[in-house]
Length: 120
Image (cartoon, rainbow, N blue to C red; front, side, top):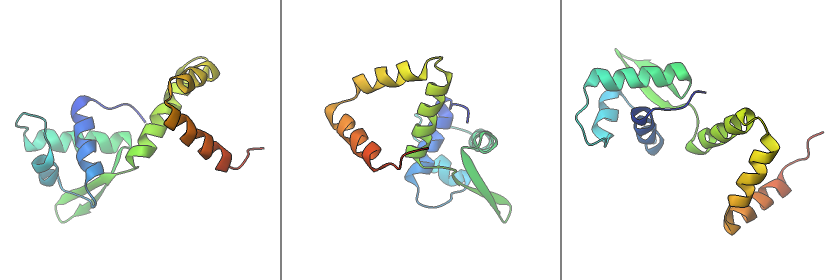
């Protein structure tokens, strides 16, 4: 999964806040970018997000309905995984990140690791 540009991120925010698949016009109506965007611009962004694997779409009549391919949490996890994998030293990067975590985040991580089945 490749990263997102500013407008792509804004479109994904709309999709993550929406409980059902939406058409381009519905995304346009919910976008809050501070500027007027053309229908074709939003359609192109959604098409790019589909090609990148961020959204899935289903044809309904003559128009597609779009929804996220993964939750916001899953996307954040994939981004963290990509950073670790490309860091050159995943162990050092992970340890540095862990030191920057708040007490609450550390406790959440500790509990999650405790519940996680051991890998062989």
